Amino acid sequence: MKKKHYSMLLFFAAAVFVAVGLLSRPLLSGLKLAAMQLVHTGDVEAFIDDVDATSKNLSYKGELIDLYSLWYRLTDTREVVKEDATVLRLDNDFLAFQPKVADGETLQEMADACARLKAVTNGAGSSLLYVMAPNKVSLSQNGSNPVADNLRDFAGLLESRGVPVLNLKEQMAAQGLAMEEAFFHTDHHWLPQTGLWAAGEIAAALALEGEVLQPENYSVQTYPDLFLGSEGKKVGRFFTPLGLDDFSVITPDFETRLTARDYTGTRTGAFADTLLVEKNLHTQDPYLANPYVVYTGGDYPLQTIQNHLNESGETILVIRDSYACAVTPFLSLAAGEVHTVDVRYWTGIEEADTILEYVEVLQPDHVVVLYAGISPHMFDFE
Image (tube, rainbow, N blue to C red; front, side, top):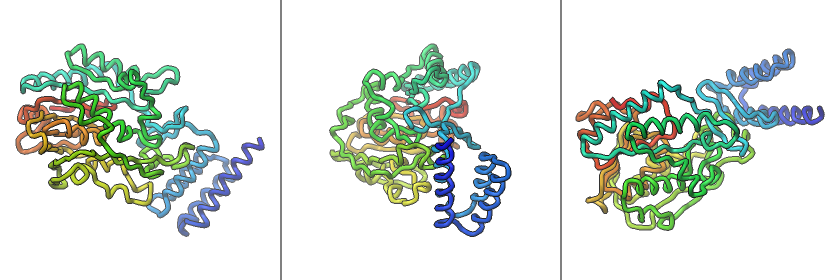
């Protein structure tokens, strides 16, 4: 009982500090009403909902989310359900989104979509490789794991249709790469170092020259306590005791000359000038900053990267999700050209309305599907 009272005291002391030091008068008024309701009803969940409603469109929302995160920590909350996602604090204090599990019929439909992609890819004289990137929940060893089971079942369906699968969870296990070494703790994405590793695994699977992707050929500059990831932004920076994430910028120590094209324009020059967008390192508010998109600049419907120092290298089309931000810049150094398309934003180009048509027009040497999760909308290739 004493521990509970002490926790409540800490929480309300933090609330007073935030309110007195930071909050605007309209927000204080809303907090006062919410606090009165809490005193009368004792309903903490309603109190949090009232504060959230009050804080929308007002200043200092980040500080209020931090206040929530203190409450979650003091009450040892492990799961927070938001409107668009459920955030989990795993046993190792890493944060994760709860992935959705697809039913058997949906898995079959997605596998069929990949089989049709394979037919078109092979018809264009290209190879197809499905790269199954791991997510934190699939790596969790806490009892039964329906997310891991779902991914394993999907991999089996792909292989039964003749679609080659590179399962990076298995590669991590074989090489002794633990989740804690591979992922941000406030974000669902893998570290840039893991992206470089994944690029090397993909290059090996495609029989590309992989020496250029060895870690010893790169310099790493680390920015400490810079990154509050997507999960951290939803539940506050104190939800995990691990604090903010460090963020690393990895650049080649060898000569590079690339041209990158996307809807933001065309950039030609060295790796750092074409594929790194370092303005994302300099936003001070962690709730507004997104350093992860230092790599490539973010998610594009279509981005092309031409490697001028390997003009005779192979052309790769990567059908991607956001995990690829930290992969394709490095993969481009082992290829002649890399084209990336994101199904979520693809609206077609003049030569091709669909991704299948783009494969036929481009006729790449390889098509790589790089996904961390499995959602039906991500398999709309037609």
